[in-house]
Length: 372
Image: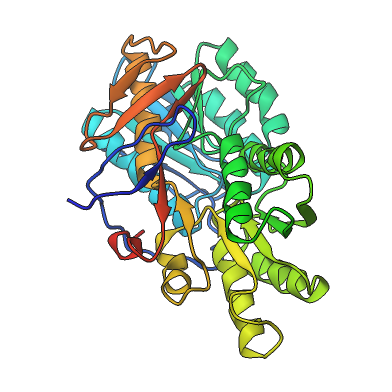
């Protein structure tokens, strides 16, 4: 069993887990929206922008058959989301429920809202969703809750809605604050910093950015946020954003990536600038949330000193598990901790309307221990 070095953020708990190594590429996202059934149902690819659902999913709850949970990632492409869907599917298999994967090809807020409306029509027992647009999803989430459908958010919250819980490895807001502390320790309290984000309307992105801004203003007033860029969760756009940041800000000292697509894109741009003689190696500190497989070479060669990851399959599994437990009558209360059945040694904690299970810190000492 491989040991994970965890970071405790506020009320997030530390855990040791047995890794499931998942092999997949991470690059430009494919154009394949999909709604798919698992746990005994046949996967089905949409023929209309990903908006169709399986007939079986529409009627299973009414027939008193297996519980049905719609799992709705920001998108069905991209390595992080692929791993998330794998975790959700595994939860469905182990718990004996139908998990329907439903998400847009790319992180399209409008398409996701349309798919959410379709999911409501299907009348599942629960919906677990990572929102691309928190404000845009609110009305649909409230509608689902009003119709008796249990709604949980994961990865990207819709805090102002009637969703029951938000599940993540740690508080998005506290993550933002932590990144700033890392910059202050590595570079200095007066560092010039850029933030690179994914989807501008995503709840997790706005919460992390707010954490960055508040930590700077409250504890590091001499630190300067010179620019904030948005990639819409596209690695090519993220790379171009990083290149532009380096060119436009010759005195830039740190880049904080608040989306998984950003830190390795920043690192690639930094390495290119160093190779071209336009930047001194080690002059820009990079931190943020990432994936082990894409950040590994940059940590190993010293371009990135440290970064953080959420295990996507475990996040998805824990989210589906929490929804299942609630459907079975479990009441989660503030301060509760619970073991996640089917995941070795994973313990989550309940903090108000939030469920956290721990964040992983990566550096040269442990990057080889992880692969996804």
